[in-house]
Image 1: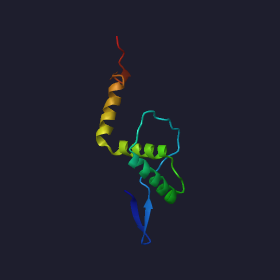
Image 2: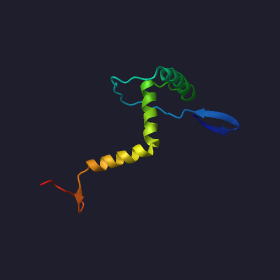
Image 3: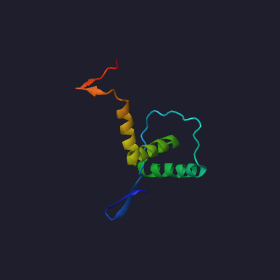
Image 4: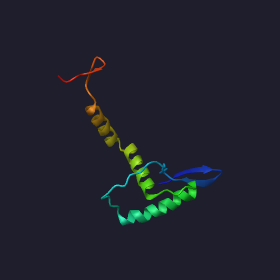
Length: 99
């Protein structure tokens, strides 16, 4: 899935996933389908060709997950409900203290 634009009649491609270089943590016990590992290597080369930056596998996975979390409306709604449930209940703008 690439974003295409017709600028001066020529097709230009831009990677859908734009990895951001931040702090990463190893995730033990995470296994990835070997077919996806091969595609990830190709995707890394694709991103490098069109952006000049070669992302790591971790950057690709992280950016892909971030995109999924953005577009999954059910997850977004569920997460908001979970976060609201964890907030202290308020009465007249003040946190209700348990007695």
